[in-house]
Amino acid sequence: MKLFTFLFVFIFNFQLISAQNISGTMLLEKAIQYHDPNSQWDTFKGEFDIIMEMPDNPKRISHITINLPSEYFKVKATRDSVVTEYTVDKGDCLISLNGKTDLTKAELFSNNLSCERATMYKNYYTYLYGLPMKLKDKGTKISETVERKTFKGKDYLVLKVTYEEAVGSDVWYFYFNPETFAMEVYQFFKTDEQGKLKLDSGEYIMLSKSETINQIKIPKVRAWYYNKDDAYLATDTLEK
Image (cartoon, rainbow, N blue to C red; front, side):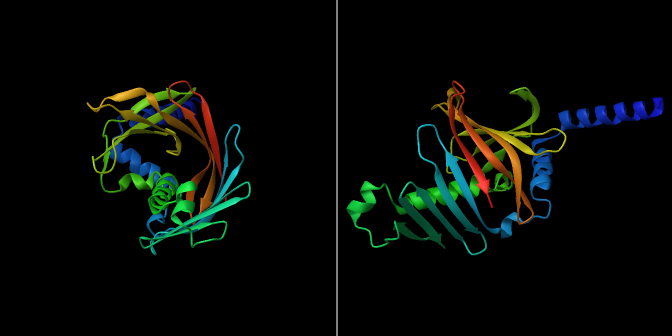
């Protein structure tokens, strides 16, 4: 029994020390190995629903289709009786409102519909639901210094990520379980003209549960909060 206890303590302490000394690149690789063990993201083809719930707003259900090899993306969003569809197919954009595609400029404007918005949705969904694999995209700068932090009562290994100017100016922090390397929180801040963090800006997103789609473990529930006052924003729930 003493030998077993000694081995347990030795292995636990070794894992803890190793986690504390891990580099940013190593942490990202371990996180990707957890979420995408068979390297399926680059050939991802899948469909799923995202149910968004916000205080004092009707529920929105978005059906997402992503086909990375074919450069195809589609989101069909339903809120109350309004149905909007955005399709981006190899850069070509198609917009639909309640099944109608021959929309006038006035209809597009009054409903805030545009191909720029279609591209924004494509980038948004493929980025957030492609994490942490998307952190290997060109223009992403991974800090090699990994911090160990306690956030909302849990211990995490934290990876700091910045981006080249052409990609974005926000600073992101990704929180990984120190034992499994599962991504459990991410957080971003805006920056000022000198590149310093604006601590009263941005949001943090708490991740829970998981769905496996095409062998990839994707967080099922995302709860959004403001950094400045912990005010609750919304919850997204993935349904496949």
